[in-house]
Image (cartoon, rainbow, N blue to C red):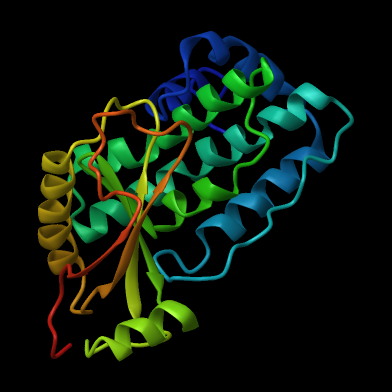
Length: 244
């Protein structure tokens, strides 16, 4: 369910949605709460999004907004994320995820809205699938970088095994992403994020997260001050118990 009528703005602020987009999002949200079909679609979307929270899974396609209003359709993913917010926060608390990490992770919603406006000149969020990872406990922002729990594919897994490392296709790995709107990326910032990830994932799981960590830029490149090796891949044991 959507938050109560006096609460959507607060939920959107918590998700770092830009202030200029909140008025429209709240106003259009009434089209969802007043439409039984749209409300049922919202509830189904939230249920699918938070199902098996924390499990690494294949991408899930959520139902599309069933109404005819294009503007409401653009904003519909925001209502899904606002309604899912209590579930992911509860999951983070259960795991002992620090509040700051939880907040920075979920703030990627606002970053997505800002990127949508930069590209299309309108409010909304037409391609929300990336953010499903954040609301399913699969991705966390740790310092300057985002770390996605995933599994090694066949090509990378074979390369890791050929290098003599104790991992192969299907084994746990971390994808590393560079979020936009955070300024230049430096080698020191990368090192700090990897150190944070070592401690974070060691606390969260006994699984050994060993794999190819490839940095993927989201949005524009970080600029000339970026670490010169950020286009490559790292092999690193990030956390967990090797006997787990």
